[in-house]
Length: 155
Length: 190
Image 1 (cartoon, each protein chain N blue to C red):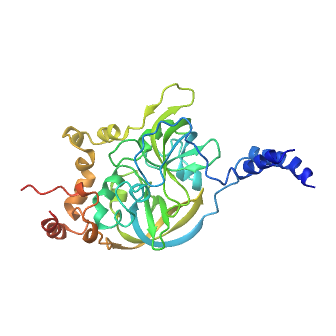
Image 2 (cartoon, chains in turn red, yellow):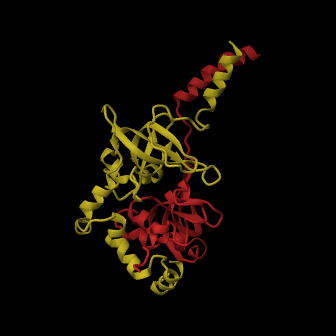
Image 3 (cartoon, rainbow over the protein chains, first blue to last red):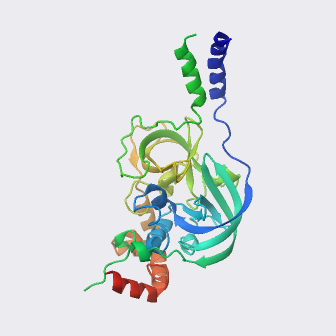
């Protein structure tokens, strides 16, 4: 039996490879998410510091820079899941520079369609149903992140 | 059939699910990032929104949408977050000219498994299929300068000169909490 199995398995493997990877995208699900709009590059790469330092007021100026620079923004839910925002209330995120700057670092509740593709969570935000503004006062712990975000006052 | 061939067959079956190594031939510069690994691969440049939802635009959104890399080797949609410039810049300006085309990219995969099940990408250089030389992924600042000629003419870092960013900081402060909160914090911090 083992001999038969070993004879069949390479053929099966080749058939599966020829067919390509299995679809990795689920059907969209309508969800409501509450969390903070974050700069995803600094968050996931660690380029500016740890996860707790690159959110909230400490990182707000950098979040503005990155959103204006075209880096994807994400909605970090309270459970830590980050949803990459592909559309915000009908607007393409990079169509106008101010679209995403308006909500940078804000805690908001969004209603939209959730998609998962290859391990990444994506969100098409159809409506922002609540916006509490910036409530994550990380500057009290970390100061500005990065340190040069706020220019040192002239003496 | 040897046990070695059987093991090879099993490993082939596991390929789509396992993290693959795309470091061969990469000349990507290290940035010391979380979970960083060099990655050079071929991919089609796609409009992410189109790929995910079917809401498509003939020019991948004309720079208004995030662009993705549909990797040739395994069909995985890789999300580039960053280009190669050290200036808070994404990769859309570098990828947009290649919408719908197959390119070879070289850069870094980043992200730790405890924070994300999938890694993201920093594009450092690109070459279209069939072209000999790579070009650096550094188009953001030039694209920004075309869109903001007066601010660019003033010189300095784009992110400090950007009119939209300057407007928000002027109204809400560096912390986004209002100018009075900024004043008190800056007086204490520096």
